[in-house]
Amino acid sequence: MDAVTKIRQKAKSKQMTIVLPEYEEKRTQEAAKIISAEGIAKVILLTPDKINTQDRNRYIEEFILMHKAKDFDAGEVKKMFDDPLYYGAMMVREGKADGFVAGAAHTTADVARSAIRCLELDRRMTIASSCFIMAVPDCSYGENGTFVFADCGIIPDPNSRQLACISLAAAELAEKVLDLTPRIALLSYSTKGSARGRSVDKITEALGLLKEMAPNLLADGEMQVDAAVVPAVAKIKYPNSPIQGRANVLIFPSLEAGNIGYKLVERLARARALGPLLMGFNKPCSDLSRGCSAEDIVDCVAVTAIRAQ
Image (cartoon, rainbow, N blue to C red; front, side):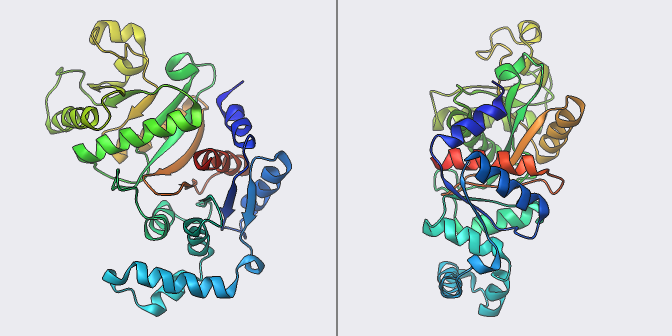
C-alpha cells in the first residue's frame, strides 16, 4: 500500500471535522464531495449559509481582545472576517472543528497569517513553519520513497534555533502521520566539514540545539543530500553517520533550497507532494499550492485529520 493510500485509510479510522473556507473554488467543492463519499473526514464547506452572524460577531470581538496589544482597528478586523478563512480558523480555535485547509485561492502568507492570528503558536516551537510529505514512486530511498521535506514554505532564512524547531516539528509530524521512526538529516553543501562557511556553522549549531531539545531523536548534519539518502554514498563520504544514508526527514538550510528541492522532486520524479502542511500551531492546519488539484486537497485534509486525532 502506497503512502497516500495509507494516509487516507488512517484518516478514516477516526473521523475528524475539517473546515474548507474556500467554498467558491471548484477544486475545493470537488474535494469536499470525495472526502464525504470516502469517509475521510467530516468536512464543513464554509458556504455563507454556514456562517452564523452571532458567532461571527463574537469571533470579531474575541479576535480584538486577543490582539489588544497590537491595537487592531475594529473596522480592519471586520474586513478580515469578510474572508471565511478567518471565520474557519476561529471555529478551529473554539473547538467547533478540528482543523482547517485552505490555499487553493489564497497565498501561503494569507493562510499562515490567519493561523498565527487565530490558532496561535505552540509554546515549545514559538515559530510557524511548514513541510511537505513527498511520495516518490519506484524509489528505495527514504522510507520506501516517502520523505518529509522542511521548511519549504514559511521561513526564508532560518537561524540555528529555528532549524532545530523545524526539525523537531517535522519529526513529530512524520511519526504521527506516517507511523515512521524519523531519521533526520540537516542538509548542506558540506558533509561534516568538507567545506566551510556561515551556513555550515549554522547547521552544526542547529544539530546541537536539536539534540538538547530531543536527545532521543536520530538526527545528523551537516550533510550533502546524496550522503543523507544514498547508503553507498554515505559509506564513502560519511561512514560514521548514525543515519547511514537512510534519512527520511530532510531539513533544508533555507526556504529557497527547500522550495526548489520539493518542486524538482515533484516534477522530475513525478512525486506526490502533500502540503505545505503548516507546523508549530496549537491546532492543525494546512496550506495548499494554488496549482493544487482536488485530489491534493483531499490528501491535505486527510493529513490534517490525522494530526487532529
